[in-house]
Image: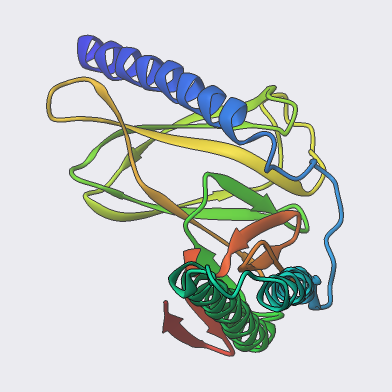
Length: 266
């Protein structure tokens, strides 16, 4: 019996070390996008001027093209007026240039139309995402939102096995590592917002890694989703994001939404 307990303890210690290493890697690669722990998030939907910038850029390009086109026509008219009757200009050259100007104009107009289409799509996503405010949202993310001292994640284990979970703050400092025995299939881990010393940490977005014992005997990262309350919506960089407290996730990363006892899969 003691040998079995020691074996399990050893496996859990190895999994914890692997989870710590994985979480450290996630912290290093995602720190630029992470929100600071204890930071606040907007509680109202907001949109940036991405669409307006696209329209402005297209308008500027069309203005420059129009100026160049007018200059071209002015020079062409002058050349035609002053050409040698005995040796007229080759019409194929300026005809080709006229065709090129027309082609560029069409491309600029197409880009402008695409920009307007993206803007309309973002507006639709923004409206849809705004309806999620106050709902429990589950999304795929490498970070865990701690809200009101509570956080939750779900992971799927291929078999009943020891699992280690490591949590890091936005500065890359490990604040918690824990081990548990997962059942085969879906599992849920709830965090009470306390670190390894038992101290309560502030609300925020925390990097997390979940490691399980693979069939080969090596530590393997397990995919997981995080759950939090939607507190805001933002639009920018041609994408709509949903805020779960200090954590911002792409609208496309949302897997389910639940409100008033109902659940909608994403």
